[in-house]
Length: 81
Image 1: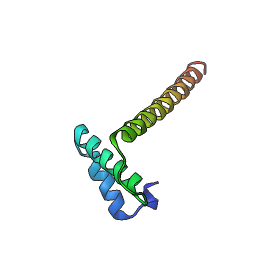
Image 2 (image 1 turned 120 degrees about the vertical axis):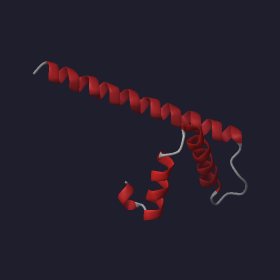
Image 3 (image 1 turned 180 degrees about the vertical axis):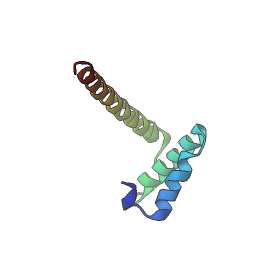
Image 4 (image 1 turned 135 degrees about the horizontal axis):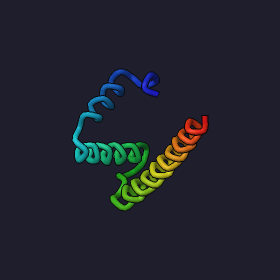
């Protein structure tokens, strides 16, 4: 995925990873606001932003649970060898 991005974008992401958690949230919120404002009149409001965070959190939780299930399955497979 990173290979498809410009060098500037890759550097931005690397810098982002070194930020403290509180600053990551602030930066992510601003990026989301700007992204959804592209081609729209006005900015995204806090209620819309909260709904997006909730949606992303649910998706992240679901993916994490699936990953743990896959991991557990692979461990069971290793134990039965």
